[in-house]
Each structure stands twice: as C-alpha cells, then as structure tokens.
Length: 66
Image (cartoon, rainbow, N blue to C red; front, top):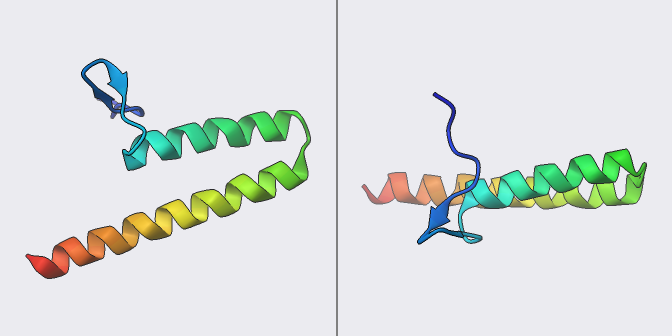
C-alpha cells in the first residue's frame, strides 16, 4: 500500500507536515525542470536538502530523548 504524500487535517492540507512539504517541493522541482529553469532547480534542490536535514535532526533528537 502506498503512503499518502500529503497529510490532511480536518480535510485541509497540513502544510506543517514534512511529507506534505517534501511532496510539494518535489512537484515544484518537476515544474522547474520542465521550464528549463536551472536556477529554480538549484533553489528547490537546496530547499529539499535543508528540509531533509531538519527532519533528520528532529528524528535524531526524538530518538535521543526516548
């Protein structure tokens, strides 16, 4: 079974959710590639890297607390 890409809270998109943010940024990356906007591709790639680093840090802290 495929995991939901976008998290819904009370039928509204939860923009604070990591998976939602990542999904949106990956979709935006595809738009930048289609437009051949290589500066846009670089920008969203850096945003994705920061987002994933924040999530790794958050997961590491949660494991250390338990």
